Image (tube, rainbow, N blue to C red; front, side, top):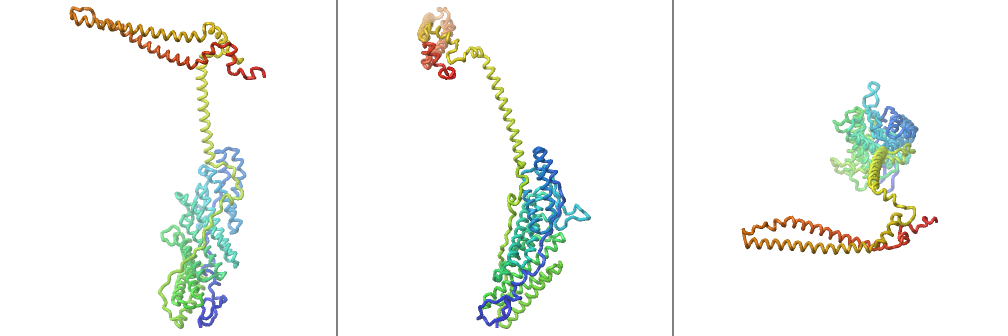
Length: 590
């Protein structure tokens, strides 16, 4: 006969393949690890009251307006009351957890709408393990003027409440309650993670040890380990395969090991506290108990196939490893007087019985070689952190939805100042341009006043002059004068050229006679005598060139304005018709 160590009872040799009913010795009917009857969960943090309404109200009155402060006075009082309720919320239930989440969400939403450094509001929180002391009220507490400090501590307490709710749900026999417990532990892990991220922004501040990065990481891993434990418990209740249970137990042990790591360092700040020294050993017990459970389940998994071709030596080695880990866990439990000592002792007795039974069967039936050691089963971690809900969806009623964010308020003030400067600059330029325009117009005011704009026709001063110009010959006289000017220019150029020729001839004759008679020719040099005359002729030549250029411009202007010049010969009626606005019905009284 082959003895089944995991299902209880006896059956005939390896020909049987029928499923067997669970027995009281079945590890699936036991507690998950049997190590702890109480789960490791930190206590709630304590805080001093603070008057949010007074500080923020004064800030709004100074930076925004007294009307803005009065408008939000009721909301600030409600926020004060909400904080007081959160500090007093110690009972682990969904109502209190939701209360803390609403307060945290409101702080997260209002954080960027108020300049909290200008508010100068202090938040005081005690260390979770030391708490307030009757002998020294200032011990183990940190006071910071930071909203992130307040949010981090509120999330810490909310995580503790969810963890305690999960602990209570895990004790229920209902599988759905175990599933709900896992969800609460995952929420707690996500909140510890969010608290750690908020606390990391305060790296330059001296925080309480429980709000350090190592401690908050430990809390996150601890809650994930508790959640993984729920997966294991639920799987055990549903009689899943031992191979699966071995992986789930190994995953729980890995997470408990991750939580234990910061406490394992001898020089760590966490390990120096007496409460944490006890936690260090209790976490080690949890890690060892679940590691033992993974080996025990792996040994049981070797029997799930009916015991055919079983590696009895490896099975014995798994049980020996579980036995060794439970013995170490039992020793640590005695050192810290753990409440789970009886549970781990009972589990150790059962594993010893299974180990001795397996050794006896091997000596009588299998005769397999027993290895000196066996590797720990590979873990399968199912628990993942659940991040806190979005503040906008969990706040309930956003009491400060209409409050303009501080950065926007500052930008608006800066914009208003810049806009006023720009307006002042534009007004100054307009005033300067107006004065310049007045200075220029004052020179032509008589002409402007002479213009009669009462009717769409030629101004009176032009109506009087047009007939006189026409009587003098009009544009024909002007063109004749231009032509005469051209003739006079040609005559003047001819006379100048003749004078220049005479002077040149006289200088030539003088040079000839001076060459012929030498010193006997005593007449003064012609070049010296003609110097002033030649300068005058050069000046005349330049003036005639400038006059020629002016004539060209006049001729060009006359050509461009030929159509307008021809209008000088028109009648007054024709000229009146060409004036702008003459066709407007408004001038005809229509």
